[in-house]
Length: 137
Image (cartoon, rainbow, N blue to C red; front, side):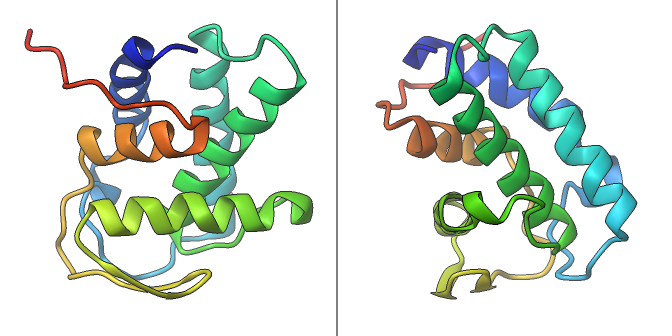
């Protein structure tokens, strides 16, 4: 994946977020919702040609687990990815203007909109790529 592919992926991931989860509530959703979201996010990553090798697949899993877990307040499903998922969530929270107190523990104002730009920033963080300016349509 290249830097120029980040915003199209972020827009696709954002489109998968149900309307009720597009603003931070701080309230947990149910586990099946979390699993479904993470699976949809992973499929979206794969659809943009993300899954071209083991390292890319792991990055796609981290992105999908971090975003799905963040939106629903559930932990990751894969223990071996917990540290990477926590770092990705910390990046997302920071981009959204929140504060990280410890892995998985953060403060974010209720009602904060989850944005395409914030998702793009998290993707860039996970992939260690420079985030280019969002293209104007």
